[in-house]
Length: 109
Image (tube, rainbow, N blue to C red; front, side, top):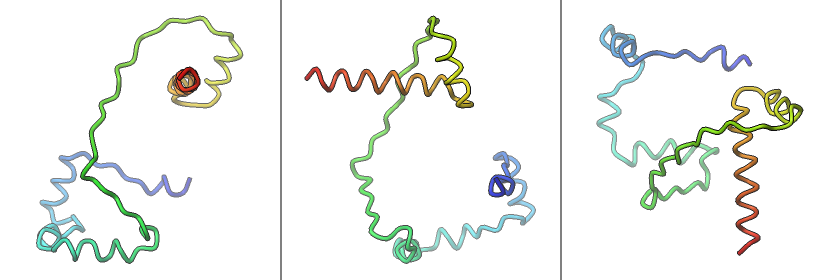
């Protein structure tokens, strides 16, 4: 939890104002002047990035499918199980149903 306590959020306007006051720690002019090789060198030396090759040439943007609004009746204990999982319980219910549907489609083929 200590890590979350250090996280600070700023709006776009707040960041612009900080930059105008000289409070930004980023040197954007220096960053813009760097070559691709200069940018990639520290990344390549980072052990967490070792062997990682990302091919962005085939990347695509996938828009999420719209959700359908559904009012359904389920057992109380099932609903409580998911609610007790915390925020996003409806998304988790959807993930369980999605997994079931995918498995059924896979075995049908």
